[in-house]
Image 1 (cartoon, one colour):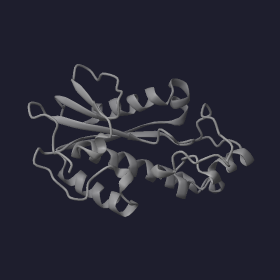
Image 2 (tube, one colour; image 1 turned 180 degrees about the vertical axis):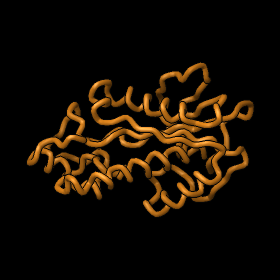
Image 3 (cartoon, helix red, strand yellow; image 1 turned 60 degrees about the vertical axis):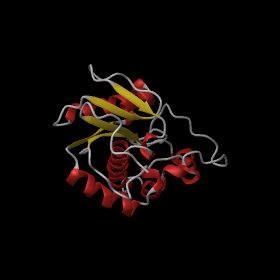
Image 4 (cartoon, helix red, strand yellow; image 1 turned 135 degrees about the horizontal axis):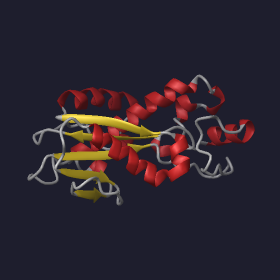
Length: 203
């Protein structure tokens, strides 16, 4: 069962990102502040939900959140500063955009770059433990999917409508055959399409 909060002393924001393992497109991050009493039976790690569930939950989150924000860092910046730093930057941008300043930050994963003077905790698999992080994972994932859907028609051979930029066999084969698009991360290695698909569970 997911918990509504990690601590009760400060206003708490959950942060998560989507798109770290992709070959193409931006990395998105979201920051969400939920009411301490928030509860939803369906909300969990976005990777455990189907698309219809994620979009339904996005409406719930955006309606009930005390504050939320979504930010992105594009593929060019990812190539310049690397994906880890780009993920931190996207989270910081989302936190900057919140209309309510948090007193504490919960981050999914095991690493984070300190944001201003706000204390934080990194929670491994936190999107399956705390509602605020799960909510951030849903927003980051759905906003990133929207972005990839919007550009997919310009480059149909990469199959972004289905793989969202992750390194599926079809996507990697298309990169080998057609080269990079303007949205590809050129510092990411495109492995042999016959190798195991590492990120298929994130689609």
